[in-house]
Length: 113
Image (cartoon, rainbow, N blue to C red; front, side, top):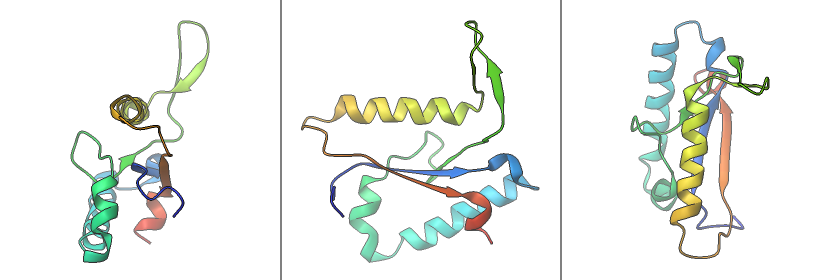
């Protein structure tokens, strides 16, 4: 990987398409926990910037929208705001010149298929 020390964010998309959101998100979390427990991933796990709920990934509803006071449409899912805050914190806390940030996006539906 080019930016081998870059912070990582895992983003699961299409939360809005899950039939049983709670069960599906827990299953995706379990799968990621099992995968990331392998010793080979120790360096990667240390770089993952996790959501405030302690899960491995930010689960995002792609369809929820709201209109701002300026009349612009934006995502209303609070996960989007938390991703934005996490990115800002990563950049502000980085003492070196930012070498890169890797955001891995996956569809939650695909993770549990």
